[in-house]
Amino acid sequence: MKPLKIAEVRKHTGRRLTYAEAIKLANPADPFIRNMAIALSLHAWNNTPQDWLRLEAALVILHHRPRRTRR
Image (cartoon, rainbow, N blue to C red; front, side, top):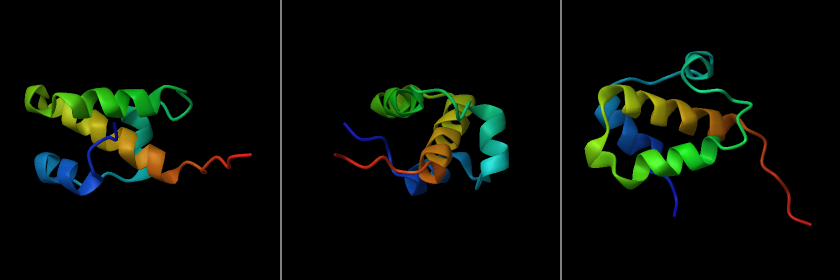
């Protein structure tokens, strides 16, 4: 399962978080940040406004993270 697209999340938040704002809402060093984004995307109908911001923050952090290369 993939998390929601950031454009869809921004429709709900009405904001455009920067990376500096995102790290205040979600820890970029957390190895499970992708799992958090997926969990918040699964039942999006149940998200509170704070959950939508956390989801956007997680997606912004994942976007700025260097990609792993497969061997």
